Length: 274
Image (tube, rainbow, N blue to C red; front, side, top):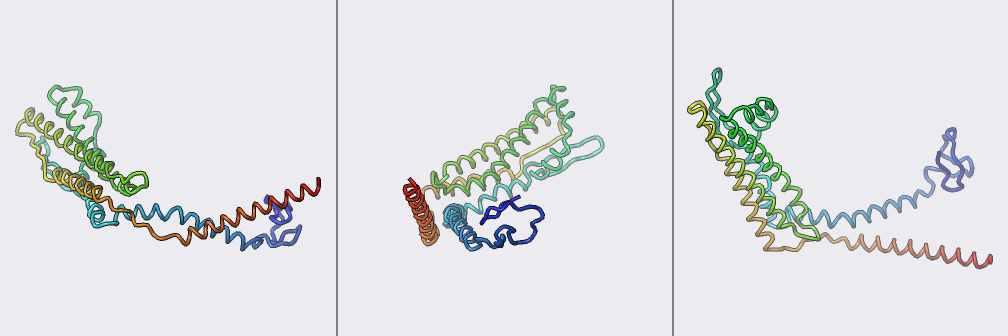
């Protein structure tokens, strides 16, 4: 159990009253004002530390007109992934397939329902389908990587106005990777389609749709805006917190002064005893 903060009395489970049995002080309200003052000091100190970080994040997103444009463009590649990326037509013995494929179809119909045993058999068991399904897997993997890059750009842009760096190069690098991954996915799908058409003729037909090109366009637009923001190099607008800083520093000085005074009294007492 805890001890009384005033007299040090060790509280028992039977000591359910708010008053200390040893000295009678109200345990709940003892040094209440001092504790409130300490909490206020901590809150203001945390505010002084956090406010510049909040200002930098805010400035990265809406600090300038270009930042607002970039904020909109951050979500453009993500939205474009939900548009038709490819079109697939297949004539199967008991069912014909004619569908547009977006990132949502890839997740729901391909990844969630994918039979890995059949896929492995297609890659390892047949010379006809081996190359086709290797590039089929690559097209799925790289479009997912492009989606990850599109989402990762949001927290990365949030830190683009850090003290150490404005993050412009990092933002451009991510967007460039998004373009590369999208292009690799599209090329892989074209190779898959070519191999399947060569093997099955009119039974299969696939083509790229406009969604993939718009994803690339979204990444390109992001690169252009990031380059313009980097060139403009606008200074971050910080909120004036000098009032809080002065109070925190004043309280810190008061505590240091009180501590030094306490040490002086102790030294004088020890010297007097000697």
